Length: 420
Image (cartoon, rainbow, N blue to C red; front, side):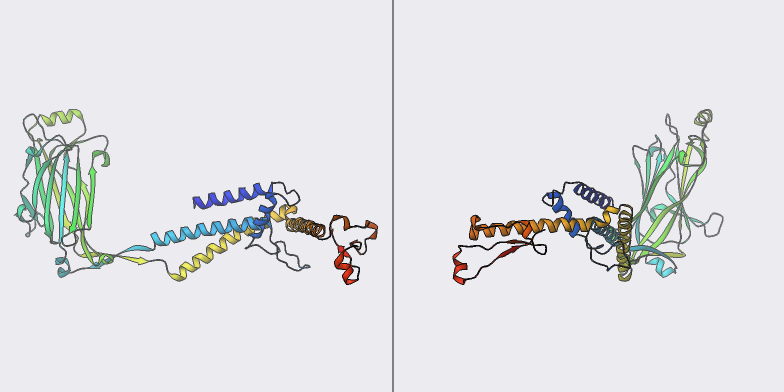
């Protein structure tokens, strides 16, 4: 659209510059350029200011040519933008929620990876208690503990930001109930357990068609929490990251099934915002721990189906083209009418241009005829009578004598030259 606007402005400026050029009785380049611009009047070539008492006649004006080309430039620019929009945004993504059953849930098989980094100066040597998986709701009869190794591979890696807990599950299936995984970092000699935030990276990949990945990542810092000032996480209360897993089916990708992980909520645990309180905590063995837990919940009652729907049809496309054509025509027709109504000189510019062309054409014909007569009979045989011998608006050249072809025919011929 910017290129289109620039092109229209350049064309209008060029036409104005051509109009300011010297005409020189139709012999200059500027006059020929103006005639060429007038010949481009294809959209407004008619009587612009209609009069009921006159016959509507075809008019090709310089102003009409300028606005015709400008309207075509704008129309082509708008049409290009429409085609780009159709190509890039010809469809929209539609999400539908569908109730599910156990058999459909069993068909979901994803490779999932959870990476939780505790932003601190600690290392994996501070880690304790990462070995069990709690399934169910605490306090209910179905609540039980299982070895974490039976469900996923886990490990700890030291990074520049702090220790990273990695949980990897190959070909995981959707399980019912809530899952809880917890661990803690404890104080070591000359290395207290304290953290300033958490970074997470949750990834799910189809086990068979692993080209597509569904993931979410981010950083949890005190600045992003509803609190005043910086905080240091330390103490017995647990920092809980609530993760929801959505089963999704992508119909546009041949029924690709992916589990979408999402960090639903973060419940901060024990923390200190005052320097004095933090120093007192560092000297107490009761607070020498950073507790962290993942609460994983499968939202398995529904499946989100994703599909693409085309929003552009043939009828809509043709209607858009017609609308763009009408808009460009109306815009420049309005400009044309305003210019001709406010500047009276523009109403008769086509007549002036035709008069100049007619005079120039008549002069060229007269010069050609003079050259022909001079070449055929010689300059000495051409006798032009006085203007007083003009009859009925014409100048008559007298008879030519001594010409062999005329003596053979034994007749006297006169050449009448008419000029303005």
